[in-house]
Length: 606
Ligand code: ADP
Image (tube, rainbow, N blue to C red):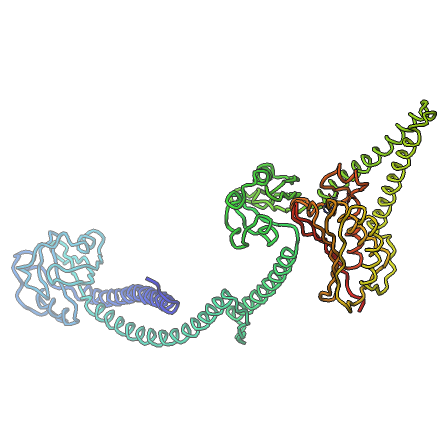
């Protein structure tokens, strides 16, 4: 059963009041009894003195053992029964008992019917020491009495005891009366105190109720302070303290929320995939980049086991390792089979206090995935580039060296062949020069050292000039070259020589990679904010897999064929850089065996 504060106070108060009443009752009874007994004995003493001063005449009873005949002495009753009656007028009960316990006379009962009184303690005491007292229940009268017994030695015969007794009845009456008054007073006190404590405890419990509602409000996130009462007691102090706690909580929650928002904004905007893993290998948190890397929706990730969201054994191994070893693990994992991507994985343990053991323990790990595919690609490109350059240079150099040595070895006198050998040396030297030219151009472009002189360039003139330059080679290979552009094309913003370089390269490739008697077309059209120029051929085409790579340095679909026609594998790479330096784009559409369309767009001058 739940008792509210009011009833708890009320019951304690009632118990206290009852305890006090009981103590008062016990104490009052003792004091009253003592007083009444003292008073009773004082009266009995006075009567005793009177009895001793006027003792009864006892000779006849003592000798004949017959009740005496009534006779009067000079100053009082002369025989025993008259004396007893005379004494009893004082209100006391008078009994005369012989040494053997026989009752000679009694003021309240017929002495002949009374039992032997030899065993009464006051009588035994009186015979032994001359006087005896007792407070006890009278078997004869059936009530409590105070007794005083005095030994009396009559002039003749044995001693007798004169016993005087007063009833205790009025002590009990007085006590009962006192109790009645005490009870009435207590009732009044109880009612008054009850009413007062009702008011006090109601006010008290209302204030506590207010505090309870306030703390419930705080728990729900409402931190508005409670008005502090001016009573200055402990409850108003408690209100003040709770207000301070609420304000502090408010501040803490606000700063934690700000902190969390900041952190999640940072984590959201990070390109690195970040995830927090629990000791049970569950994902507690992950940012968008992380779920994108694993190809999942963000809500799918959280709460799930790592093994459920990825099958990458390397990544799972890293998670297990960091949780087991409790030290940062750096690793590199490659994910995906169609388009493999490389990630630098850093997994750091999260160490926190273990509530059970009280010492730091691993509570999880933070996983950071950094996409280094581009870095790895660039490294590979650089490696390939060095290998390619060496390879490209070695071929002409070996040829030059070989033919030069042949000439020196005597072939110089060989009229028939020396001219051919020298031509070969010259061709390879030209090839070397072209190669170094292209490499220099490329390095200039890549180091952002290419100087472009921007000015409006008329597209029609550009196309016409380039077509004219290529015409000879077109004719050599029996191709048909077509030019197709509308009137009024807007001029583009660019460096004329560089743009011509791009177009010539594309035309050159179209001529080279189209079997004799093919068709080469140059078109131009205005698109939004730019002019798009397209060089089409119906030549050998480029396989889909190579289309993206032909813009890489030294990349050639058919190396032997490219070498044969004097290609360096750098032309498209340079062209793409030039177009992009103009703010445009260069791309290809091609089907093997049907031909290729190379498009590039250059922004217009306006
Ligand atoms: P190259 O000096 O070898 O021509 P490029 O960079 O100009 O170098 O071209 C790279 C490769 O792209 C060529 O080796 C060739 O395989 C392919 N290619 C370029 N243009 C065409 C085209 N019009 N038709 C077919 N293949 C082409």
